[in-house]
Length: 160
Image (cartoon, rainbow, N blue to C red; front, side, top):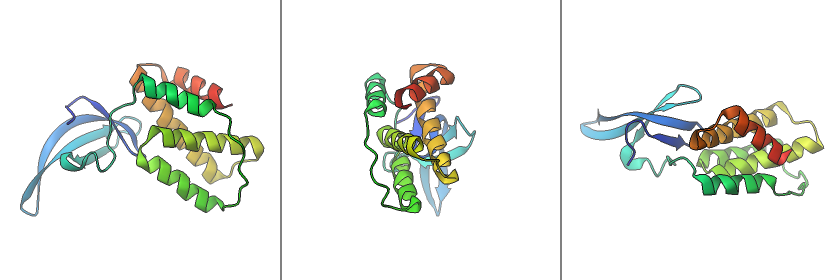
């Protein structure tokens, strides 16, 4: 259960603040919803309270997970032969991002940065890389109460 004013992560959208908990009537049934305002985009999302866990709503990462994320970003990764098309890899990347799992987002970022070191990224690859980086930086910054530019420099320094 989230409280008003608490932060939570909504998959693929990023960190949101629970602005209210409202009851809405649909087809004669009343359901409670978290009203989340996504910090990065100022978008409002309604999440059914009963279904919050199933849609991937979760609490911000803690210090232990943040250490593990930086450890993951810093692990060497051999370039796998690019046997799959960009559209298939993009689907894999989007699937990882949509889970809302910060480690999946970190894996996408690490792999795209590795590919970027070997070749010029396409426009679509650059957009996915930027999205993964933005999600990661924003959550870590808010979780630690740090400035985003400091977290971004640390993230960039880990995999570069």
